[in-house]
Amino acid sequence: MSTRETLDTYQWPPSNQALAARVGLRADQILRFDGNTPAAPPPSARPATLARALADINEYDRGRYEPLRQAIAAHHGVGLDQISLGAGSDEFIVLLAALFAENGTVATVPADSYSMYRYAAGMAGASLIDDPRAADLVYVCRPNNPTGELCDVPEVPGQLVIDEAYAQYAGVDEIERVKDGAIVLRTFSKAFGLAGARVGYAIASPATTRLINSRQAPLSVSSLSAALALAAIETPVDVSAQVAERERMSRELAAVGLDALPSFTNFLFVPMVNPQELVDRLLPYGVMLRAYQRGLRISIRDEIDDDILLGALRAELLGAPVASAPLRHRRATAETLLNIRLRVPGEGRVYVNTGEGFYDHMLTQLAFHGGMDLRLEGVGDLETGEHHTVEDMMRAFGEALDAALGDRKGLTRYGESRVPMDEAIAHAVVDLSGRAKATLDINPDPGMAAHAFESLAQTARITLHVTASGENAHHVAEAAFKAVGRAIHQALVRDGTLVRSTKGSL
Image: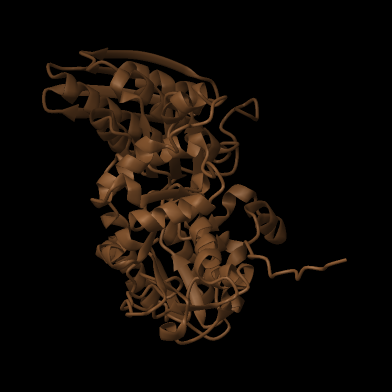
């Protein structure tokens, strides 16, 4: 009877549920700074994107997702016969080790690099060596994980594989080296924000691509994942905000005594002794980071999430007080996908982006004048009109506001405001009553203002009276949204611990 050696298993970090149970939090209170993924999915990742793929889910794709491969080829300026699709770039890392280094040698550049290369070598029966000039297969992680550096690519006699999972953040790539026999790996998990879809690809010469395809399982990527990837690559990727946030985080970390290495990725690496000790100290704040032997890796998310991490670090390292974390809420329908972070009260830091510019601006005014911190991002079926997007953004905001208000104890409950806007004037009265009722007179209405307020009142469970009039519909709506925001701001003032109702509850 033959026996097989059991290899080390790739170690995934614990789930949100397991981490939350460990420190007495809810799973939705855990923020992951350990996976190098964005704070939100891309705008293209909405239910409508999957509609066609779901309609054909009973069928195989006989062309190996040719439209997706064509889009990838066009994106990089290479031929269709140079693209292979896989279940993330990890599939190719494992497959290439078996192809080029079975029972041979593997080297990585830099030496301290992505752990999957070691597992792939083990599965191929290969030995890891330090000298890339003597290896059958060389993985170059560029930019490097976990250090974030942009290393040089060595000239080697063995097969060269350049893993460019983070290339969009660096703004440079090595795809020209494919002409000289290199294989370049890319993924949809990082800049494209589709980690859960598990789609990656290899760019190689036509001959090497045929070899790779001959060793793959048929259709290791699902049709649903391929649909998401196609929608993502057809939408321009802009990582400038995350790069700017990375630089801000580097400065803020330095201010608490944590000096990060220069990074060309969407994470920062902080050299330190015993980083796991700091990871364990931060987990009760709902913050999960990644410890390595030589330091701490911190994924960059967005300003709201990153400020939660910074608050926890200041509390642990400097003894500063901790601000309350924003409420997180998601609404997904067949027409829209919306993600919300809301803190009530806040400091008026607001960002709303659904692609519906006018009503994005209106909700921004309401939240700002309401003294809230709000980040609402998402997408709707604007190709069919504004109705679904506007309705759902206001319903989602209302749901989040209702959750943030909780039992409404200690709130003043009532608020009133009059706001002029040039020739227009609006009057709003709000009652955080727990009962949904909207009485509205907006004249002229730019189209969806009254319906937007109705949607908000229904899901926030508030009583809302608004009258607004003027000559210009834009001015009328803007005055109304500002007035509602200022009325809510009054109603949110805390003046004790009681529910403002003789019934004892709202």
